[in-house]
Amino acid sequence: MIVPVILSGGAGTRLWPVSRSAYPKPFMRMGDGKSLLYKTLDRALRLADGGTVLTVTGRDYYFLTRDEYASHPAADLDRLPFLLEPAGRNTAPAVVLAALYALDQCGADATLLILPSDHLIRDLDAFAADVRRAEKLAADGWLVTFGIQPSAPETGFGYIRMGDQVAGCEGRKVAAFVEKPDQATAEGYLFAGDYVWNSGMFCFRADALIAAAETTCPDVLASARACHASESGEASPVEFARELFMAQPDISIDYAIMERAARVAVVPAKFDWSDIGSWKAISEMEADTDAAGNRVQGDAIVVESSNCYIQSDARMVAAVGVNNLIIIDTGDAVLVADRDRAQQVKAVVERLRESNHPAASLHSTVHRPWGSYTILEDRDDCKVKRLTVKPGHVLSLQLHHRRSEHWTVVDGTAKVRIGEREFLLNANESAYIPMQTVHRLENPTDQDIHLIEVQCGDYFGEDDIVRLEDRYGRVPKA
Image 1 (spheres, helix red, strand yellow):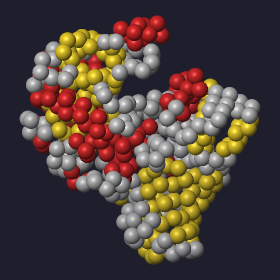
Image 2 (cartoon, helix red, strand yellow):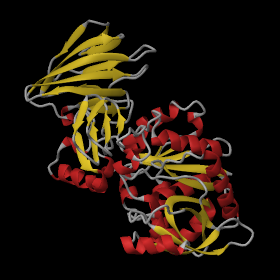
Image 3 (tube, one colour):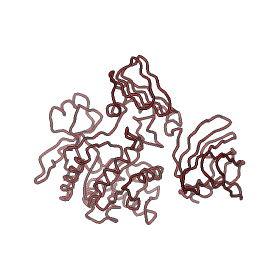
Image 4 (cartoon, helix red, strand yellow):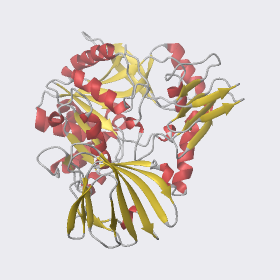
């Protein structure tokens, strides 16, 4: 019984400004309009025996992930359970918690297929065939990883040195896991022929993983069991006591188990694979190339320029007389980088974080459980947003101490509460909410509603939201 486990989260700092911590890499859209997360779910559903796919993700990403899943025509949300992390804690705790959950819910014969949500695989038939090879090894107690045949002396990946063939199976024993090499060492690995890239995808029986953890990382297992025992809620999503979750060691599944276990095998992959690790990687796979080697996504004019990748979400970009550049415009931020130095984009995010700049984590469009808002203007004396509220959803019952608000419905019909008064607000109608007045906005219809919110006051931070009731669990517990 294969139970795919999708690991979703991460900051994706090398893909800023599209990937940010509030809307990370798995939610990035590829050229076909589908996100990496959607594509990962699609692969998982094709292999899930019984249709069950387990997702481990951050609590902040739950509603965004669930909405992404709901857009897949084959997804049955009742068969897509979630384990929600209160904060990031590396892959070993996530995978061990998933194994403990699978043992309880799916039985001892559950074979876990661990899938990071930010990889791109196009040959789904070849992927499925390799998973079945791994499943056969896992059934015999092996912990299996997938190795990618190197196409270049890549220094940004870890490597696996393959050993002897496993008798009766299409897999090889792992002789060694190797850290990211320097250029000369990577060239030697490529020439040797028995090294593969470590894909970060795994396949093993849940009970075999737990047995290995008892030997290789008993501290991780003990803390995961304590955390597992704290599960709240009888159904998905499953949440954990924060203090117990944070007590788990911050260590990867590679270091904690795979590099130390006795029976570890690798299936040399026959499928295509990319971890979309940089803008250079995206530039080499997206969009058509013109005669000068330029690739363009969105609106752009290119004049006497060559080998550039330009992506614009909202505005016209013009490039004149430049070469070998990556230009990314998201409307609220612009990246200009040499293609060959694309890995250094993460240094931009580090600088932004050091200065507490919101562009490190937030886009101008921010997603919320009820929908989204886009910041149209942000000044010292006012803030203007365009809100989209999904059908049947409702914002929290709240008040503000330092700002008033004006709501104007652009499209649809909203149900509004201001103080003790409740009424409907139709398109081209407005309402005023004074400071320190309890209010709430709801969409009682089956269509999105859109409205403009104008905030006036001397402070517009999110921490001036005092939530009194909230269906999404955002009211602090007493």
